[in-house]
Image 1 (tube, rainbow over the protein chains, first blue to last red):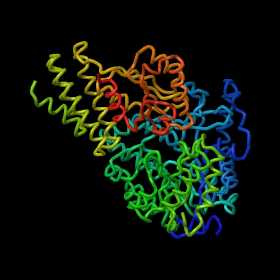
Image 2 (cartoon, one colour):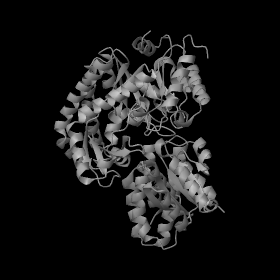
Image 3 (spheres, chains in turn cyan, brown):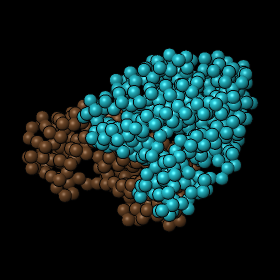
Image 4 (spheres, rainbow over the protein chains, first blue to last red):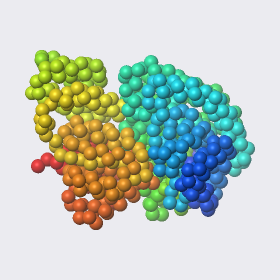
Length: 389
Length: 214
């Protein structure tokens, strides 16, 4: 079987030749290490106000090219490791000066989040979501009005980006078209979680309007991705924290249920598959995912108590399971034996009958490429069907 | 003031009806009687403990916990100015911050809110807190506990650096170290020599309560 057949067979809960592996490489630091590429040398520029301003202008003028080039690295890295799939992703950002941030630059995404540009000790850049930019109802409406032209630009760039990725890599690796963040995150993160909670109780009509807006925008985003011909789409909302869902499942259903049903219907109407990424402890939401029409769940974060065996026991083969490889220790500092044991256990607990894609549960810059290599070696060693671990 | 106001103060919180709690707090404050206000604060604190227990038992979710924290802030804004100095004896001091390189503060803020309502005096060191700032806080405030929050795995080793520095400056046996955050686990806490790992704000507050009890 080739990578595509392997993944699609798995997504149909049938046994392929071997357990497929998805890279989850969404970090420039990781891809640079895997490809042996030096980081872009921008540290000196960041330290000089004039050069920093120039860098900001260049980044804004060439943003789609920056994303395409970054994603090309992520895909090259995933291919070099021997992965069957990796995520594409396109996020529309505006680079702005932010004196409060260490390196003086922030990125504002079109949804209203501020990301800090970080640089590690080797000069690799990364970005982390820090806070929302629309902390009041007035600010949110003003943000949406001001950014109207950027929403159209987002859709155009998403379409172009995914087409390019499919053209360049479609023969080598399965590109899972990623929506990035979903309706839940796009609703609360621009206002911050504390404000969001207040507004849910004190301004429910406002929250309803935000959700409607974000759902419509996401559906446009989704259609632009699907036009590229991808077979699988992944959305992402962090519904869970360390010990449970961020919100009462009934409340999530009431606020967001219809949005997710619309998204699933849009994907299934084109005979494609829909995965959904969520960090955190989400046992209490698994049945909701099935009800909303998700084909699979991505992440299954072990440090939040998610265990593949328990998830399988709870939902059987109603969901494809993707991930669960620990990124807090195992893929950062674990020994070869620990990586191997973790992979073997994941395969044992989830892979029988198909429906499991092995993958790190998330991506961050401290994941060690050597551990990723061990992960893939072990997957190939223990993941041959029929599973015998 | 009738017992009705105390009931409304408590029930507004437990039913997440902010107006009911705040209106009751205003009526109680209008009495101008510090003893009445103190009784109200005791009742409210006891209701907050019920909120914490509901969260730990899985009956309530994080959004409800956060909103209860908002109600608590509003109520205490009304009642606190009327309390006599020293009427609420602090259960001890906690110094807490998000480690260097990490700018996330949601979990830390929830912890600060609940630790305060549990009677602790909390020194919030903020985000991106350097090792030196944690050490200075340990020296200056003599806290029962030094709390470190960390969302990113890429910054978790900052916790180890702070603990090593506490040892180097002979402060380690004078302060307990508690850690929490998405990137952290009990295994990590053990590996860096922290005294405790807390998966959530309520558990963290409970652990420190035990440390501060005579």
